[in-house]
Length: 217
Image (cartoon, rainbow, N blue to C red):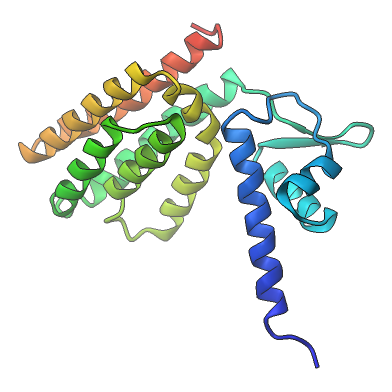
């Protein structure tokens, strides 16, 4: 008799392998342009080659790795073009989500303040990245537009390794925390336009820092 739990187990395994690969890429342990050794990765992630290959194909669709018939899989290098294209787009989608649910955002302000306080004390870039994503996800959490939420989530995944690169400088975490506070304060004043502009400035600042670091000032 077939085991009814096997498909779910395989799905969990694929997800775990994918998340493990994403963590290695986002934190820079696998660097842009690096050729991936599938055997070594299988051992590191404690997974067979099949779920590893499935995870790599998934990450190729997300733009984190690329494949070549001769070289196999390599990590996509950090790209100024991706930064220039993704950050403004994500900012506008977030602004749209916030503007369309403006009357509901005050309900999550206490949660935003709590996350932001923890973000300011983040002990590592990895933790700061998690908290920053949680802050932005909470800001847009009142939207019931599932398609919009899915697009925002996908774009946030696309910039994870850039955000980790940004969060490696603790002084920049302080700047972002102040920008978050500015967005919260604008909502407290009932200044929706000010809040929207502050969201755009938050993304524009991060984008410019990254471009400068990649010599695209």
